[in-house]
Length: 77
Image 1: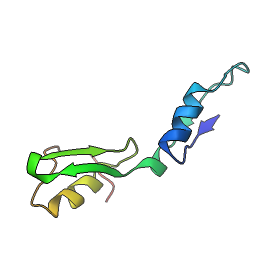
Image 2: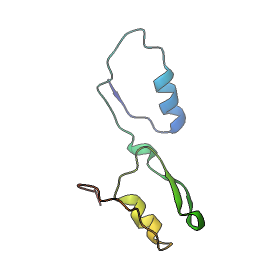
Image 3: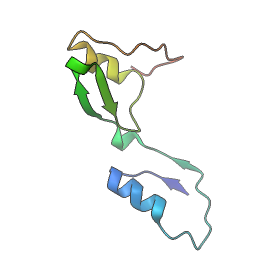
């Protein structure tokens, strides 16, 4: 079974669901919940959703002259 929640609430419900059938979760896709949740430029902090790709936050942080100090191996741009 592949899980692909459209929201945090749906993801929470899927994880809490009764698994009496014992169907194995083979994969999950969190791309629908990739978003910048909060960015406080003055505090230099950012909170991102679970599906956020490494290549996206730097572009959004750059609007305030900030960057993410990591070097991902193969970022999707």
